Length: 563
Image (tube, rainbow, N blue to C red):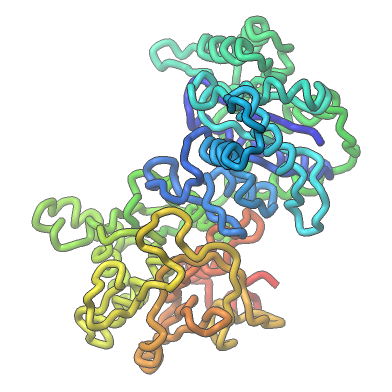
């Protein structure tokens, strides 16, 4: 097993996740089996209880693990399936060590950060690195490990120390370190500055890790003199200083690394069994990134949500839209709308903001209402859904977005004025969305029905199920509120169909509306399974409908869902 540790310096959010994913991608394109581990030094057990404004979205894995959004990047870039143990946190490590201590596993010894915590980190990494992540079930050959945060942070110290020991345990030829640093270019001088990188590498080396590759994030290509200066002061060859300048698309990053000889370096440094043959996988990435740069036609989607001030809150949603836009050869223009701005209260208090939000909504080609929690902004989302339904604008509701589409239809078509979800109005006379029995409202973390589940399509006439060799299932990720099954017949009598249900027929998973170009809601989160070359069917349908191409696409006998 070969281990590649990716650390970061100077600032957080420097792009370690994309670089780790890109390194994995170019190695996988060489025929190697690659897995990935993300280490988050925070004390939380998992990412499930975070506000989206803290670390961005919570990515959900097939086994129900609620993890950092970087694991979504790994899955999308490498097309692999990870588990919750691929996300390691300080909370998980301390919990496992304390549980062992309570059971007496340490035989009365004083439990300390060194060696007990550091040993637990190393054992976890070695164990998880061998877990198969591809469909063939074969053990990986390379494990890319991303250490979150910045070198020098107090909370990441035990992890740095663990890897200092780890490099000797697994031997030099099986371990290497990539350090990602920032090379700023102040506008006042226009000169690329190396001092932040020098300080960051000095700090890392002082902690016992010496970087094998220094990947420099910069706005423009690194000048040769700057490379040589970093090489001289950071104890590496100039060839070990890699420029990762800003590019037009993240799909260009693997190509950028490949062009600078990163594969050749790993081949020599880690003694990798790489075949010298054309790499089909990288050719596909090049075609995809070239195509994204040449797009001329544009398609705009209004994303109506609660957390629109921080786009990482909807990272997988945005990626799923990008994958679908690329598949139909359109440039994507996302119009971010805070759902609270669409509500009548905003008209009274901030009329300019209200009218700007509605102008964005009305000018968009399609409307997306993603998931979320809490009552704030829900009425604004319902107004947006009402407009999409009446104006026959393509609409996709995901999770809460689907539930609110049910509420909107109940209020305005079935004329149940107080129709609502029990999450927001427990005393409603028409509870069209209800709590699921698995949910424990007294506890916040790990209470939802999460992970891969089956959804049965009840008809072959729905847009999402129209495909050759029709099968009756899709795999999904589900949350803890669901449409009230007792009221289903009232909706279906008015053309609002629940075309997909769970295996027991109790939970409504997919909705579609008659006499509308594309009005779809899904209880699950299809964005988590979208891939650059295999877009998610509900998002693909939304983009096709928004570009006015859905009917012609279906008439040609094509399908939204993958065969």
